[in-house]
Length: 105
Image 1 (cartoon, one colour):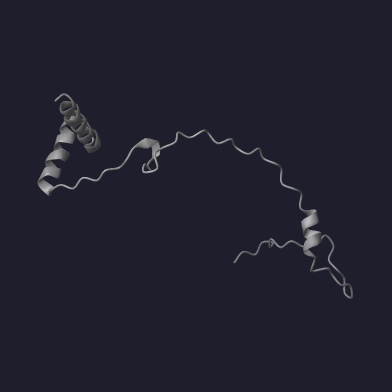
Image 2 (cartoon, rainbow, N blue to C red):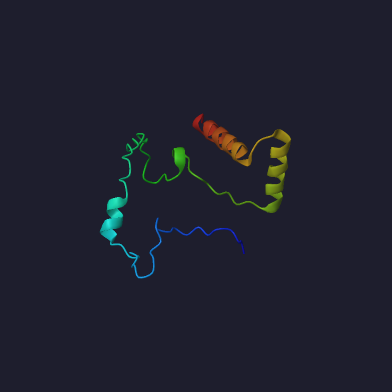
């Protein structure tokens, strides 16, 4: 334990024997001594692009989960490493290519 001074808040003058000290103050007295907080301007929200009610992701992107067997996943992962592409980029490119080819029929 430190032998230095404590960090107690003492009144400016210690009461002498026979003098009472005001140890309890009313809440009104304490509140009246607190300066009012400065007014901050409220931030103006940026107008948001309305999204369809079924799209809850940011930027209008929707997350899709793909389940695949372990061997296919490993092949996809290694292909991504070799071509320096993410799984997301590869799958999105393939899906867009498939949809573009389907539109041409």
